Length: 461
Ligand code: NDP
Image 1 (cartoon, protein in one colour):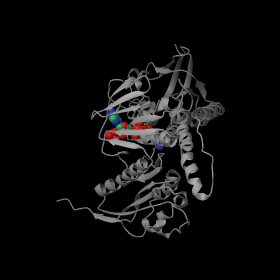
Image 2 (cartoon, protein in one colour):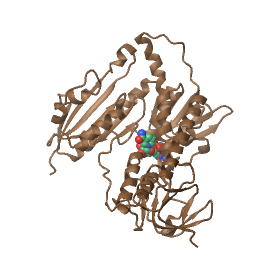
Image 3 (cartoon, protein in one colour):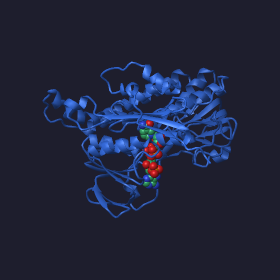
Image 4 (spheres, rainbow, N blue to C red):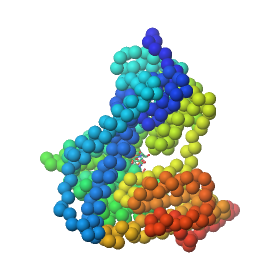
């Protein structure tokens, strides 16, 4: 029996679901959104936002140290983890409340419940037992940490979810993984004073990023005292009276207070009736969708990490908005997933857009590389041994800048702006016509005149 009928039922009130719900409601649709945990999703509750707050906290350590070179005398600074976590939690609660208010203002009905698809049109609210009939359904259930292979003692490893709520700052931390979350948390814990070991199964961290970026970041992280162990995995974790004994695949072992796995995330596709509704999954495990986010069932759509396309918050938001425009606004809108700028909030920060050098050399007939590495001005008096890195990858035939890779302070801020130029298909000559802003680090983007390398692809036989 149907208790209520809506035009759109959204499962998951994270970044993508909330945006879709609000925009669809603005077009006049009757919208209901269900969330079983907290409104805001991974990004707001236990991802990007709290992570960036911890990153800010961790960076004060360098500032205090460097201040001496600029004439400051400080009494030894002290850090209190509990204060940071309590203040972070307060801010996250404020943001969650703002999300709820925005949904209310948009006249979206929010239900705090798990929602289960009974078939392609009917949804059951587990909390109340209510049945809702929906003309359209949007799945925006995101993803969750995946711990990797089962090993002895895996239950002792935390994921990023728990890292935000540790009762105290661990003195010694071992992180497994070499992606976004692993390098970001390595920087956070190290900045706050912990001894950090990062264990990565491959040759170098941040697979998929430009090789120069990977090498530069690794060297910078090691300079900051983070121990990076490559070509190894965690084989077993044993709980000790105080801490854990972590054994690696080469039989070496580390005694630490906290073991964190950042070994990727998987789409949330189970336990809410996708099969009953007839929704097909893609080979990699996410929901299969077309460029309009439509699933194999024509009136069911999916956006964000559950589709495992480009797993980033702004992409999910864009996909949610495009879905609402397409289905309720009469404006079919496909999301452009090309050249998405992205930042890794490691220490130092990474900002990238477009092709890596390796990708460009594999795809383009001619590639020109411009790159530079230098000591940022602030480090001169600060006395810090650190370097920035800037690289432009240019299509040698058209002169178009097809990639930009930055490691250094504010790389995330910089790549957002460079992203506009890259999306506008700016050429290296366009970059060069722009007057430098002096003295900044970013001026390198418009002053790199000498090619560092030039490659011509051999014609295929
Ligand atoms: P990533 O996919 O970035 O990295 C996962 C890492 O774990 C890789 O280094 C991978 O190695 C390694 N790994 C995977 N499986 C195993 C295993 N069984 N044993 C050992 N190592 C393993 O995932 P994250 O968890 O870091 O982040 C999840 C997603 O969240 C990212 O893809 C990103 O889209 C998003 N995110 C974005 C942020 C941002 O925009 N700043 C911040 C944080 C997260 P290998 O390289 O060999 O595959």
